[in-house]
Length: 501
Image (cartoon, rainbow, N blue to C red; front, side, top):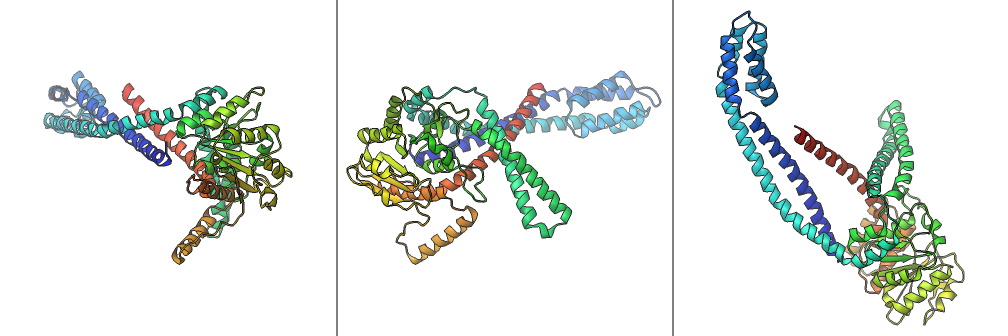
C-alpha cells in the first residue's frame, strides 16, 4: 500500500468513525422519540378520564381515585409540556380540596393532549428520517472502509504471519487498558506542563498566591504524570504483528546490537522532548517508509520504546532474519561489534538488492571502518568522518554495484539551489519551527537519512520533522484516546438508558 493511498485510507476511516458515531446517536434519538410517542398514545383517553374524575369531585372533599391514577399516569408517561403541567397542578389543587380550581386548570386538556400527541408524531417522524438519512452515508463509507482495511491487512499477511510466530501472546485487554491509562498520563503531563509554564511566564499578571497555586498544581501534575507514563507506555505499545497490520505497508527491518539499546533509550534535551527516546524519534522518521520492526532483547520484561519488537530464539534466529530481510522494504542496520551483526551485513549483501540496505555508523567504535571495508568492493570512507554525535556519525547507502555512498550526519543541512524568495521562505519556516520544535541529534540523523534515501531512489518527505513530530504525535494520540473514551462512555450510557428505559 502506497503512502498516498494509506493517507486516504486513514482519512476515510476517520470520516467513517465520525459519521457512524453520529448515526448511532441519531438512531438513539429516533428510538427515544418513538418510545415517547408510543407511551403517550393513550393520552386522550386518560385526559378524558381525568377530567371526568375532577367533575365528580367537590370542594373540600378528598379527590376520587381516578384523579390520583390519572396524575400518576401523566407523571410517568407524558413528556414535559403544558398537558403534564396542567394535570399535575390540577391534582395538587384537588388534593388541597379546591376542586373548582382544579377543573379550571384542566379546561381544554383533551385538545391540548391531542396537539401534543400530533407534535410527538411529527418529532418521531423527523428523527426517524434524519437517522435514515445519516445511515445511508454511514453504510456507504463503512463498506469501502472495511474493504480497504481487509486489503491493507492482506498486503502484509505474509510478513505478519512470520512475525506473529515470533511475538509473545498478550491478553486481549492489556493494550486497550494501558492505552487509556497512557492517554490520561499524557493529558496530565500536558496540563502540568502548561500550568508550570503559565505560572512562570504570566506570574507578574497574577497574585503571589495564585502563581504559587498554579505552579504547585503544575508540578504536582507533572510529578504524577511522569511515573504513570513510564509505567504505561511500554505496556501500551503495539507488537510487531499489530504494527504491520495497522499500517499495511512493507516494514523497515531495523537491526542493531543489543548493546546499542542503552544509547538509543537516551532522551535528548529540549523543552518538547523530555519523554521520548532517540529510538522513538528514529522510528518516527523511518515511519515515512514503513512500520519499523526490530528484534527485542531476549528475556527483557518489557519492550523498549521505538521500533515494534518481536523475539527470536537464541539457538535458531538466522532463518527468521533471512526471511524478514526478503519481505522488508528497507533494511536499516546499525553497525556494532557483535559477530551476529556482521553476519547480517554479509547476508544482506549476498541476498538483497544493494539499494535496500542502509547502514548507520556510530562515532565511538574504532575498527568499524576496516571491518566494513572487508565486505565491500570499495572503501567506505567511514574512517574520515568526524562525528558530531557519538550515537550516529554517518549514513551509508549503496548503488547497484555495492559502491558505498557516505553521508556524514551534521547539524547543517546540505546546500540547495533556490531562488531568493524561496530562500527567505525556507529561512522563516526554519526559524519558526526551530522555536516551536527544537532540533535534536535524531532530527539531523533523519535529515541525513532522507538525503541518502533520495539518492538511492526511495523518495520520502519530511523525515527530519517526522522525527521531532513523532513525539508530539504520541501526545496528540493520548488526548485523542481520552476524548474517544469519553465519547464511548457517553454513547454506552445513552444506549444502556434506552435499553433499560
